[in-house]
Length: 418
Image (cartoon, rainbow, N blue to C red):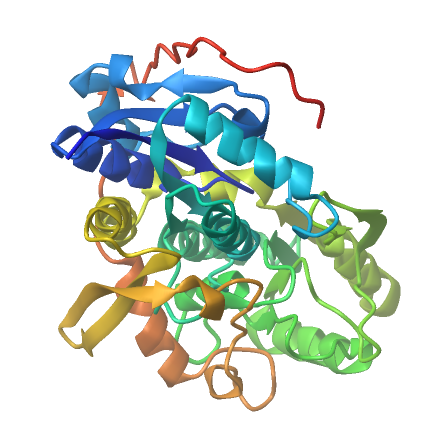
């Protein structure tokens, strides 16, 4: 059987471990006698549309291995959603043209729910156009909102970072609260799902241990109730630590911090819920406060990655190639929890038709009855995901990261306008 080449691309917001998935894909391709070269799209799917391909086969084994401990997206990512096939057929046809020109028979798309949708559409069109292409979605998202999979690669490391940051900042404010700051607010990612905010709650479990409030997108924000809880916490413990999701919203669905813009996927641009909430505290209660926005730090913190997360991210990359070579198409390697104590997991294929454009929210039984914290059920779910350390090698006190050649593949087709 003649070898065909493979294409890999990264999509959407990157994670501390998306390159571990890239490493899994690349090493599995190198070990296969059915796959010729592996090409990567520069800046995600845009690289395929513009025929801007990177020849991954020119990278050394050492550089590929180093991807496992390198944050960011090594080949460039993008927020670019392919529209429906009917109205934007030319884009999909262009993809197939590029794949034909470079003898690409395998398509690996590493991203979240929107990427799963793109992967499914590419698979469907290749069938319609009679070009055999095996399309596999490689799961990734810090938001942990992909369905079917027990958790999303990328989330465990963010959870570990946020839980650690909450714990450390809490010790800071506790030591100063008698004469200084009374309230600390940490803003975390999570547009519609409160998984990352929930992870902040792992910082403490006993009576009075911070965080004293967790504010989820799934629970309507009630200013009066929140301020009452803040005041109670300061009076009882001397201070109050709040972890708030960027997607916190009022009963009518309005975000506390809506920047008024949308991104390329049509999602509302959020940010600034921490200063908004801190301003309410000052206005209603008069307490001195500090706030922080974890922003890119939470998803770039490879130095504090969860070992479990790194292993799962690598495994889904490897499994994606295995599924493709086994003739599976329009599938996603999903993580299945086999047991909780001890924590064991395996990977099984999930049909993309059941993954694309679906969001997994926090179950109500994961959120405390008062809406301001997590239940023991949620804690049992989260704790295994942050276990283990997988420190990168360090040089001169700084993490060593992969240095790639990113060699361009010669173009064969006319230019294409996005």
